[in-house]
Amino acid sequence: MKYVALVLALMATPAFAQVTADTPNPFEGKADAAEAGHALFGKMNCAGCHAYDLTGGMGPDLTDTSWQYGGKPGEIYHTIAEGTPRGMPAWKDKMTADEIWQVVSYIQSKKQ
Image (tube, rainbow, N blue to C red; front, top):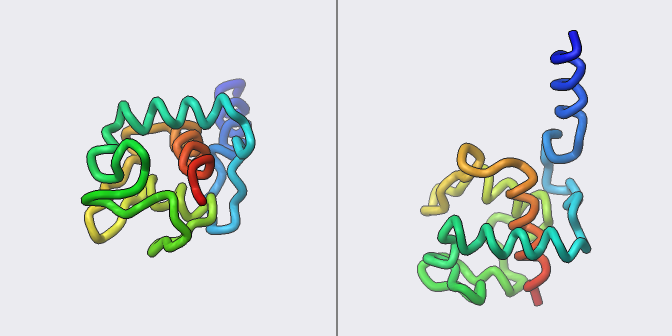
């Protein structure tokens, strides 16, 4: 019974809840989350497509205001988690929800 309660409690936290376009980043404004996201950006080789400065290459620029799949925090989360039909792989099976939100925090910290 304790296990079921723990699972339900975890599912109720923002990181595990259903993410929509308007879902705010639970780590927004937290410098440590952006730093962790920066480390993950390198570790997961995001720079291979988006460049170390996030200005793009094979993948799109992540510092501008033109976002094909949406630039709101929830939309960025969804793009990272689910991938896109045009080459962005899905990361939901390789990163936790919190890790994805940390990468979103890093990207948000660099947007113009």
